[in-house]
Amino acid sequence: MKHIIFIHGRATKPLEQNLRMLWYEAIVHGLNRDFGDTEITNFHNVSKKFVYYGHISNEFLHENNGDVIPDDYVSRLASLEQMKVYMASDFNKDNYNLLPGKNSTYEFFADLLSSPLSLFSLGQKLIGTVAPDMREYWNPEAYFGSDIRFEFTKALIDAFDDKKNHQILIVAHSLGSIVAYDCLWKLSHYGEYRNKYQNSKVDLITLGSPLGDENVKKELKGKNSSGLRKYPHNIKSWANISAEDDYICHDSKIANDFREMVDLKLVNNIKDINSIYNLTVRNGKSNPHSAIGYLIHPEFIKVFNNWLSK
Image (cartoon, rainbow, N blue to C red; front, side, top):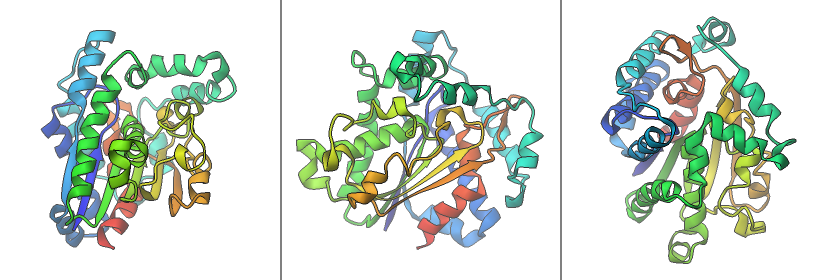
């Protein structure tokens, strides 16, 4: 029996049932486009858990930044329908360059303000400007991060405790990849978890992940430890997929940042799939960080189907 845990990313979100439907529909379409009906049946037959914390992030963004919580299911659905017209071979640079409102400015500044200037906290300021909920996740005076981790930890423990689930896959987008990493670290090292779960394994796919950013790595669970204590012990394989111009994952290579995990034999392999072209257009503008654009992309579908069918 297989089990898949999905966790979404940052920013305001639609209602849980709507967001879950968008994710699953993007995957089903991609599987059908690239592999046919059999793989759709496999997807429907696996156990699935969609970890939703949109109620937490929506409340924070609304109260602290004046954002209106959007009922944006319709615009997201329209984006998905637009991408369904593409064949797998259409996800290329030429089509990406034709998208309206394409802008790499955020990624440029993310690159500029990352490692060299992080000593002056400019990286944190940038994160706070473009992703305030990500900064709030690390706020020691807030329950924001703890409450989100609680939601994911419940799902992860349930999957580990279900003896029927011999294979577990985590698919994590954006901030969700940080949450997944931190929770896996907790289950590897916290006293209340490690004796039971330290050797329980998952496969991991991260999408649009900021885990390669120097400022982000300084905030991860285990950051002050070394050797085996620094990393989670639960990851069997890790595939990281990053899109061109996605400023959240401007440092798109994870394998070099976490190479010690391979050296310590904590993970079998870490594979980066760099600079894919996310063809999402939402409200008339290119959105290379969009989760549904990652989920419908043939590179993700290939990795996902390899796991699903093995």
